[in-house]
Image (cartoon, rainbow, N blue to C red; front, side, top):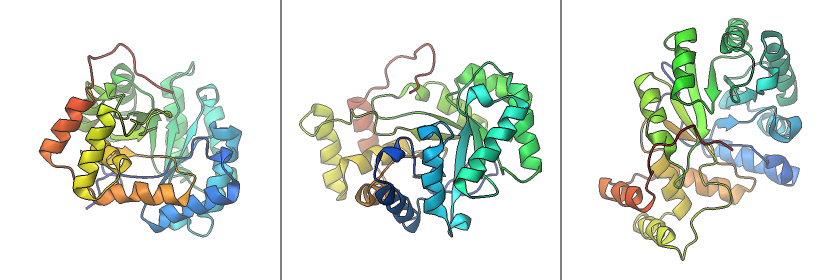
Length: 280
């Protein structure tokens, strides 16, 4: 059974599809990759108005055309658009680019100068009108989450989308426990890092390769299985090629044993708690 996306939210596969920088790939190839992901059950599709100045949303819109009912569609509003009126206008623009009448979840991309209460009021109004079905936040640390929960009340914040990969595990100290305690899904963006996935010849790469070999899997599938090892955890790797999407989807059936998780934990230590939340 798939885990729930937030308190009382829909059940989703733990692996979805990101679209950051997808506009840099050949459009036909990117659209085909997203559609292949849907075929394989990767129905959580994430985008944002910021990505390619809306071009990512347009590509996602083309990919999901005729298949909207299959998709759990997420987009984000930029902080400088996150006033009450600005949030509504940004949402309308995203819906137009995506070719749909609703988002399944709408996120504040990161905190800006507008009060959270103003943005959340806009989210609630959009939800009441059926333009979004749920809402959440991105790049929020525990202090931000505490404030958000106080303003919104229990059960309203669907997710917190944050940077999380094997070499960046800061959210495990406090953010993940907070979200688990409060029924908020954690969505890992850039789950392979930014062009720094462990090389096969490195000590870390060898650990991944040995665990992968034991499962008939790939190192990236092992990484995704580790990052989504708990029910509240989801990941949205970007893949602009169908072959990469197929590799990502293979992680859905991979279950790591306790000894393997401990081995990865040792190979990729989370380190001490940092001040401030890392983000890209």
